[in-house]
Amino acid sequence: MNRTRLCGTAVILAAVAAVASGAGTAPPGAQAATRAFSIPPNAVVIRPEIVHVGSALSGPPSTSACERTLGIACYEPAQIQRAYDLGPLFKAGTDGKGQTIVIVDSFGSPTIGHDLTIFDRAFNLPAPPSLTVIQPAGAVPPYAASNDREGWAGEATLDVEWAHTMAPGARILLVETPTSEDEGTSGFPQIVTAELYVLHHHLGGVISQSFGATEQTFPTAQALLALRTAYVEAADSVDNVTVLAASGDFGATDFGPDGSTFYDFQASSWPDTDPLVTAVGGTQLHLDVEGDRTSPDSVWNETYNTGANSTAGSSTPNPLAGGGGKSIIFERPTYQNGVASIVGQHRGVPDISMSAACDGAVDTYQSFAGEAEGWYPSCGTSVATPLFAGVIALADQEAGHPLGLINPALYALSASRAAGIVDITKGNNTVSFTQDGKLQTVKGFPALRGYDLASGVGTVDAAKFVPELVKFLATS
Image 1: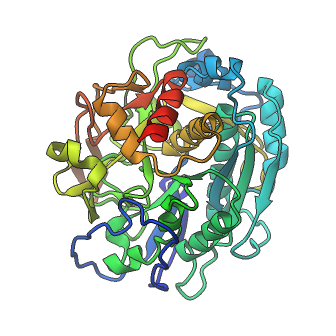
Image 2 (image 1 turned 90 degrees about the vertical axis):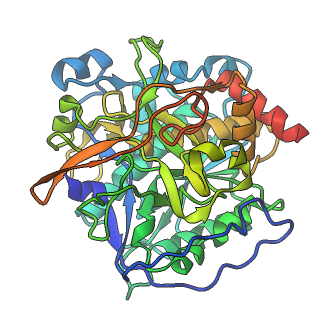
């Protein structure tokens, strides 16, 4: 997949109205202090975090088929469900019933209903109780194939299919926004409008966002802070909605304002750096055909993985790794005080990690115009985020209500070495790439025992994590 496709939709962002305060008690992080910085006014690039590997296939590729033809592993729903230990939860009736997973994407996909039906049929998954599409921030323009529209349609497809895989009994609400450029005022403000609509109408308990923009590309800190309205309200005790965001696919760096070249220093993206958002990073699973692990999970980093990069349309080295690092906007929230030795005075990301590697891509089906209809192995933190959204829907069902901001619980459970938090201790998110004729390396962060800036607190064993999370939040 070429870099233009990875960038997603470029929009010009101007400052918008100040954040409206949410009702009720202000959540931790709502008044997070910020760091002063000076950035030239540039375009803010909002991009989906999906990576497509290879070309369309006529049927869902198996692990062995991908290894034989693409040089990478591909995983099907049953393998991912087993890897995250969903079987005991499903057997007990915890499958997301009664819950709604909210997926927010620019433009969406014109074929999402048909594509999900094909996906479910191929893997013997039940249809969700409902798949609803809304456009509360304005009508999405008619679909016309382009890099932007295809990229976002692929993102929406991946998000819906794999959130459904993790919580097959949950309703899916796809919230589409019309992110066409309009004198520099479109993009994130429309996403905020759409998410506020979801909150005001109590449409779901978890919001999944597989997109981001590099913090350094915002013209000022205030321009970013003015867009936090929905996150402040979601974390408020009245709404209590969990908000997730992908931590990015470029390791310790990220895109500059042109959306095609990378910063040659550490950089992180927003909204995952927001203290009111749970940042979802990337791991690499190592599974057999049944979904059992052949070795422990590691930090996703395929900078020098020739197979992954060649099938994604890039040469090595290429910064293909789970995003992680320190915010230049937000100071350390109180729930990260216990990991101050790692994050310093900054908000650190990610918080938690799930499968994202291209050598371990997941099968998706799509049929929208502009790309060949068929099956695509897909990867990135765009996989990790809807996977974790499904896990949260299971926890919401077990609790009997939405759980809200879960970050304090994640760090407390990690500190207590809860069985549901599985530590990641192998790998790093240092990346290298050739730019302007020079080999650049951005030193990242290693996996450590406990919290680290490559995998967060680690990943989850859902059968243990779900009841532990629910119990902790009920008693804290």
